[in-house]
Length: 520
Image (cartoon, rainbow, N blue to C red; front, top):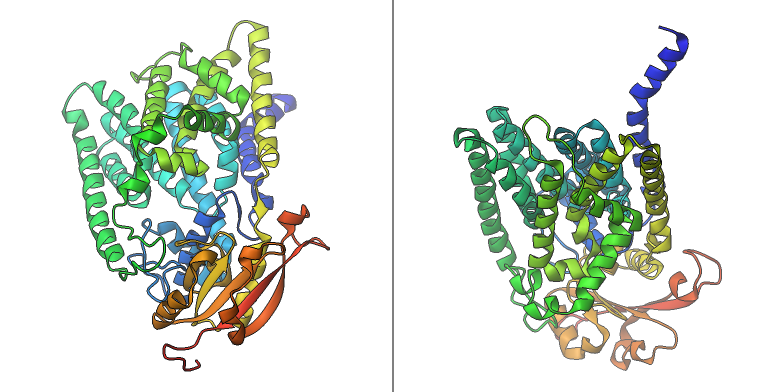
């Protein structure tokens, strides 16, 4: 073999691993730094779980949020990612970097399982293209390194699908148990993310050939269902134990709030809502070129592999499951763009099928179109987060949180008031690493303050914005002022975070008297 052949073989052997490494290095600049937007609200809850685990011990059955005062305990999901991040935090000191590293690790696991599915379905070339698109998707770029649990749930949902498929193909009980474990974890972390994989799983079951081949899948489904029911029973018991603070504006208990999960039909009947979601799919998920290639993928004829389903039909079934997931959990999808993460897999698979087929076409022009479209998708995907103004930092709450942490003792409870605080808002309290209650400015009255003081509140932190008369602290607080701290608010001034001359807000800190008027 000639030296040139050796070089070509070495390049072919290392090109794909290096490409994947490059796709993950794309996230490296955003692994450090403060929590950022979009949706830092949800990241704050995740990060606070981790901080509390580091500070007070890992208890995955009783995680705590910042905004429920001294009670704190509330479950949103099985906090496996937070527990893993807390192990790193205990070893090296708490940092949001560890949440991001864990999120990135689960992204790698999700991409690995997705690649296995795509390769078994459509071959190596299509699988590599699909996986690259999966990792390039703008929302994948952002949320793969955000302190959130979504890629963990996505990884286990895809692991459930792949292991169940392998079990049907005679892979043995190891794959059946793998599917059960993945399904159980997906259901406990974020059960809606399992819905999109059920139609392709049903398609695979139809082609299994015998009930014997489906035995492992039945076991996996039963295990998943049992884990979900047991976990929900625990969640409802824990969340139901939250004190009955019905006097707190906006209060409700997180016990099966289906009104929040599924909403009503009225929201689904507004065309503007569907257009909003379609816009996200095109610009935040697929890119315009990717959306076009995904549509082509639905009608691309590609051969079956090893008796498996037709690639386009399988991907179409996955897309149908994703659509059903959006339709069922419509309010969650409409409000939060990260709820579109389960759509990335079927869209990327369709793009991989289309471009993979085009890249092997006998016509050189078609092959050139395939290459150019992939390059275009990659370029648009890399540029889109900048265009969408992602990775922006909430400098106001970062500064307010730092000031509160400076003045308020660690074990004291804080009432936080700003221009849009409301019940369950963790954004300032989490950054302060303090427990307390967020309250809307119009809701804070002497009576409400007295109730919160009875529950243990020791401080009021009031964030005032210049020129907003509604945010001037009420006169009754003046006698208990402890500090007045200027806060930079770079976003309003149009400056970058920490830039000189950024407009100033003011944090007013007040000490709350004990019930009966005694000083604390």
